[in-house]
Image 1 (cartoon, helix red, strand yellow):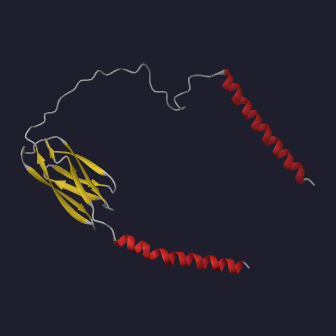
Image 2: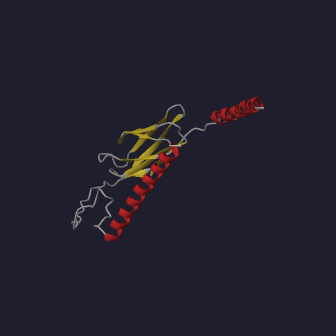
Image 3: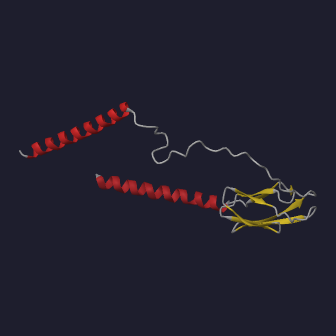
Length: 174
């Protein structure tokens, strides 16, 4: 009886694998080419640009003359800062490469104004005390009620352990 069940289970497993393999192969063969994007397409020197390569199943790269080569993980985007010495009014090519799936190119236009960094001063407030770490940070001090409850739990656990051990020892003597 058990041999019939095992054989039928094995046959069912082989049949399910045989039927799902063509579907998986068809899904792999219909892989679409990645879609590359640069946002915004016009930026001032020192500005930030978001690069994405949606649909790329491997880590892709993007490079240009106005920023360093950057890696883009699958399903995410990367933000780069345009060099401060980028020429206003110029167009720079952004080259994308998704290994095994394709390449792409976009033009990035540098706007006329040159951004200058501004220095902001902030008033730093000093914390009244250090961080309470190590014990969860929320322990303020000993509370008599909590101490009594903890002691009661430890005593109850020890009593229960002694009771179980003695009971087992008595049952083995027979």
